[in-house]
Image (cartoon, rainbow, N blue to C red; front, side, top):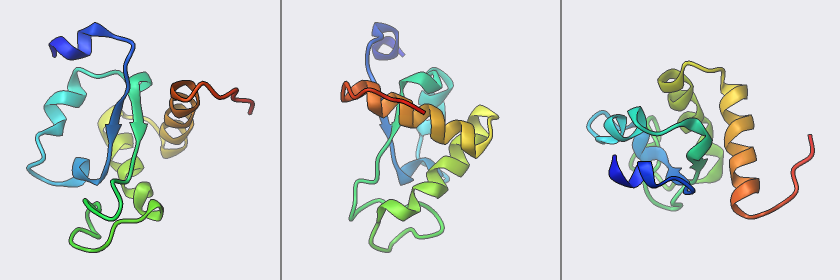
Length: 96
């Protein structure tokens, strides 16, 4: 929680968020969506239901589904916000 309060950071969320005993729920309760980016950690840490298989970017939809449940937003909103976050992180102009 103390690190989250420092601000001006992003936390990368991967397939681990879909694991039942990941422990990420407590962290995400204190983290606003505007500080989250998506990552795969490919080829490792594939999300449920692909756990144990080689991870790939196409599985990020499972991470988005889980985040939409946690933050009570649509999958489209999660995708839009995390995409904007990634653009800001890498200092890329974002035009929709």
